[in-house]
Amino acid sequence: MADLEQTLILVKPDAVQRALTGEIISRFERRGLKIVAMRMVHVSRETAEQHYAEHVGKPFFDGLVEYITSRPIVAIVFEGPQAISAARATIGGTKPVEANPGSIRGDYGLMVGRNLVHGSDGHESAKREIGIFFPDSSMFDYAREIDSWVLE
Image (cartoon, rainbow, N blue to C red; front, side, top):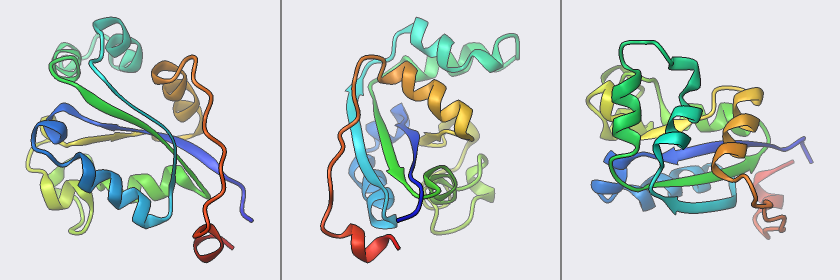
């Protein structure tokens, strides 16, 4: 079987408020990715500032923090071969109106500030972000019967 990697997905407040959480999760699962950790959380300001640390000092930083802390989100760790790339392709481009049809953002988004989902952009960020949202949780390690039909 291929090497597995993990990625963090955040179902953002706009998606939760629009009742798209189940649809979004199902897109990743249908892709073949496996949920190994999941929780609903109202993000604290401290956690938001840690998560968006690379944007400190940018004009949009305060808006990001205010938005992600405004309502509950769903944080999920997905696992699979090339999970980061697979998840980012499933999410679609940052600008929803330019995202490919069939992607989450391409199908459900209109504005950058309401783009529904966050996904880790690389191995280092995935490791860092998972540690922020799941600091004390161990990931579930379990077999799925479908994996032999999805993974080589």
